Image (cartoon, rainbow over all chains, first blue to last red; front, side):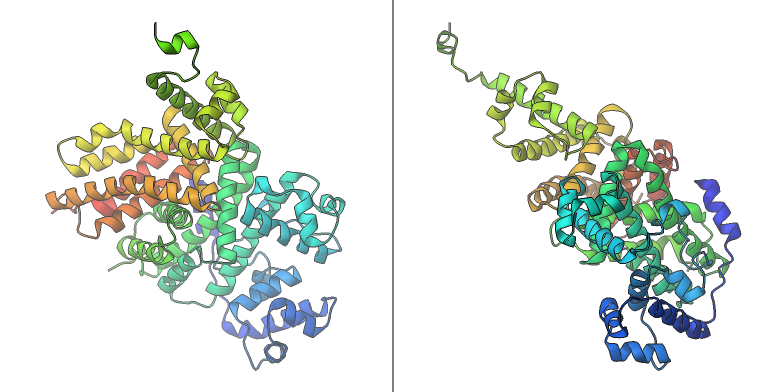
Length: 300
Length: 210
């Protein structure tokens, strides 16, 4: 792991595209729309954007928001990295997931695959992996167990794909939110902010992680996927810290050590929030993380 | 001869009850650690305890009751094993180091205890009753760390700062590292966790030398 992180540093050019690539992003969204089987209006509905705003964003009188780019990536089955930087593997603010940690390229009927995957992800997050049967997923999707099995031959595939789905979402979200934050201190704080288990998608992702930790403790065959996904996350922290150190904004403490501590701290504090009294809050977690960043990472 | 023996009354004597209860909870913890909470079966616990399912049901009406009691038992045991540390004299900062060291997921009992906590947390996300259990138990652990930090601050061996927040941070990091150790992450062997915790205490808690 130590070697891997150091390799990532040396290879990371951390070139941030100038923001006039907004035009290029717009063009790529148009491409996604062209490949969409429904109308522009339907597309707007699916990404949760008012049709008028969508039009404006497509013609350039309005900017797409980070959350919208994330939704577009999901509906269009592309990555935010491609939307913004033109390539899935573009070197960017967030560490590109290794091949094994990304969802498989889905078959032609990607709409159906996506629907099932999202349903499975949600059910597993909400009810717990062991309580979710293939029949439950089928019910939610209004389809048959056989169809579910077609896309997910083994029961384990539901969990492993749910994790990959979470990883992709997190990656997309990070690129979308962080790519335009030039101040590296602010970027680190934003990165931390994106880890808070707020109600909704983030909380569901946390639930998946907690379950994967436990399943991986019990079953060695799940550990590679976990390790790839977790390493990606740590790389994202590490490259942010490394950049801050290059800029002289952060202290010179061993970046790998800081990364390990910060990642573990986020995990543990997240668990506290998720398993404590309703009052054991996100706000306290935020404050503790900020205290760590200010005390241990920021220079001055 | 006692009345109980003569009439073969089914109620065992109190000390036997306590012992049986302990046997069952011990077995439940072992099964939870080994196979996970979701796969737990009362029959399996009974077998592991060398008792019948009926006997287990005598002590615990429902599986939920058994599980809750197991979590409490697990925690109470952990705290008990460290009672001597809480009362030890000397520099509280050293005591803090020893307390954290004693919590590292090593082999045997401490590893098993950690697995049980991890299962409690995952299930606790979905079960408010378990969250209440966790919060009350875990609160004691948190208080111990907080009080030790506060004592160290009082002695001047720890930096200033809200001891509750520092305790939350230290415990948070310990928990996060432990999760990786539990799943045998190659990047986080127990030794690395030990070193990271020690460094964390040095950085965040220990007073800077003059």
